[in-house]
Image (cartoon, rainbow, N blue to C red):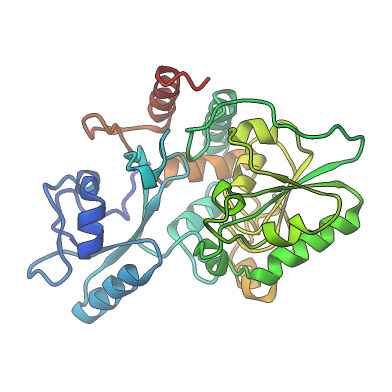
Length: 335
């Protein structure tokens, strides 16, 4: 599929100083030697990374100058190592309409999902989903596959996903601290075994979570911060409840029921049990199509992102990206 919403190849594009300094590799995704300043004369548009202050400033400049702008984020299949450890991304998302994480406004990804109700798209998505599940891949793939340490139970096991406080995807998806509190209360009332997946930085006291502190003081709740892969965790749970984490998408790929307490891009299509707050219900009037999981998978992992081989920055497809990540994991002896 032609991604005709992308900037023209080789177009001169502006970006904030922060983006140009922190992500010097980004120019390769646009076929240029370098990105320029947002106030440079003659540029053909502005790119915005994420939703923090530099991106907001770039958006204001683009509007004042009457220039088109594109919203950028990491792809849902990014790398083996972490971005904060300077691992290069094998994919990024480039959106001319909005940010997929922002439930209140439409995005190009949302339109692609809505238009993906097609048999050929479903076949593509099925192949992608099978490969991702078989190879146990997710966004970041730096952790080993190993069974988590959980006490046996005959009860249904619900995995609740905590997120780091300050994660912009939470308010953008229409979530709040109250969303996490409601999620925990509902889980406790269900009679299931409640397992909270927390971030290691939260457990170590370096960061604050939305859920971990309260869960640690709640009898019967199990905190899990094991340094193991997403696939390993999903292999031992019956349901996944989340506010806006990609964990929900990873669970959907594996046929695990998902409950959402805000509006991530994969919610609202009839594929998740949506317990939305008022702030995330606006998306429901837009997400009226009813794709299946394979059609959504094709949109999220093939029709939407751009993949490049970080060794030489040649454009590749999702299946080549999967092969490269699998090879890198094996070289690092992570499997």
